[in-house]
Length: 475
Image 1 (cartoon, rainbow, N blue to C red):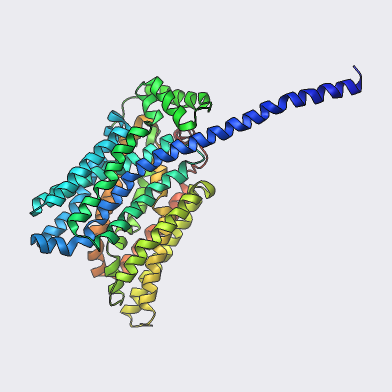
Image 2: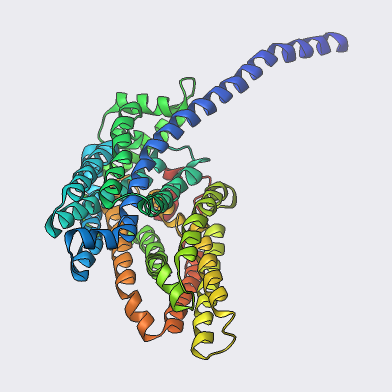
């Protein structure tokens, strides 16, 4: 064969390859579009539960005076109404993993929605304190389950390149729900505000009919055909799911040979690292002071010298939304660890600024700077928290546990979060009475320790499948 003939053959082969290459690119585009559409729809349905979470938490703040006046409640009775939600949420957290494992992720979300609907109706029709408390407890139990199942469901359906950003929508919608409750509650009656809490629950119950169950859960319970169908719907009809399906099934087969895990078994050497990471992140998230600062921001501003804390509180509510959206964008670009370390450093700075404002006030130094420094510190804190310390622990919690221990381990992590939330919100006023500067110094110390914890212990999970993450932690 001459050189010219050989070149003609090579050119012909190159021409033959072009359509196949183009077709492969076209299929990849179809797969990506199919994946994004169904995954985004499924995520939107799930985060209605996160919005419900925020609505429940934010309900008591704008309704306190109206409920007390209408039903002749004492301060202690309303305090019970406000705080009993955390008791319900802790019980919901303890049972959330088992429920999600037994009836599926969609089944757990349905159950949560039913509890929340029951609770809101009890609040709406309440004529005495008992019905208020029963309703508040029911909504607390519902959001205790939501706080576990929503991030887990999103992590299990999302492709690895989108998982971080989509999981951050959980925190974004919690923030949106709380802010909406605060704003709407200032213009409608407390009974009407209770009815608005039904809306996200109804959207969940309707939306769940149109989205697939978590493929990983379906594979775990042996529903192979439904597993493959769900994975196809999530990845696009033209997608090749063989490799992903094989990875999931291989991981589950190895998990089947593991003994049944109880809560006490989580502290064995095999599981201790992901447990330390999950629990540690929740401890540092809560003991950095978010619930004390958030629940009592208005009183903090007044204590620092403002005649009214309303303007600062509104700014607090508004600033969280765009900052949390920025965090969602950065989650899969910068990675979990850098985002969380920068965020924790920012919350530390915010606590130092706020603590300094109270120190200056106590020492009667630069009084004109005290209110400005207090508001700036709180806003720096909430901005930094919203971009990383708020969403990242929930994302990582949903990624690090193997599926055979996810129910028990996830319940433990969510329980620790709710216990921390209760402890900080309960002790905040007492600590502020002791020393405002000391209170924010303690919070700053926990924020600084968060940076060290993340740098030394927390793994990076960006760009890895759930199976890869869990294998690296157990090795």
